[in-house]
Length: 245
Image (tube, rainbow, N blue to C red):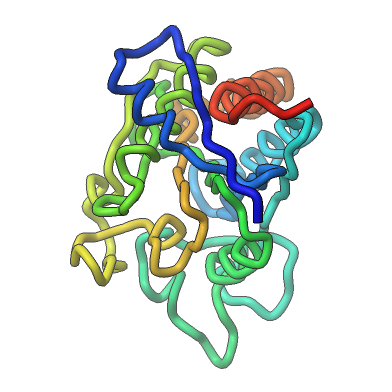
């Protein structure tokens, strides 16, 4: 398995950011997995799953050359529990087995692990914030937390430069302080899909793009979905090491 180190020069940060990103390692070719939200029960007259899937599809329509990119999504998969609903921070919606069925979240992470990605990007829309913002989240206590924060920062910067979303910065996954799923290493409330004990990708981050009420019209607009998807690909291009010719 060939490993290449990324040496990234960004015009957006300090030398510490550059040194952190210089430690990023990807296989050749790099593998990136997107996990759009599968939730259909968030917001009023709003389907987060379909919106996030459209954003991911827009990203996948123009992948960075030399990469392998995939979407894992449980929305239409039968014999799962919480395949179109559920919280990323609730045991009963994620790690629990219900009548022999795994959850939509568990299915997606299992499918992602099979692909052995270098970078895992979850795409969601926020709610009840009253803010037209974009947030990045990473798993706290992760061995690659510092790198994950910088990777998320690059992606967030590109999205907010391409749109009128306000850059809300990078946050730890215990900050929402809700429900009951906890990382066994830290004991903190966590996002199931970012937990290193579940998700085997070395680099993992979650985007909360807009608010399902305040940003509703913006998020439902196909042109904006395309802009966000393309911005994510521009960020991926910055993150990846130069491709050998």
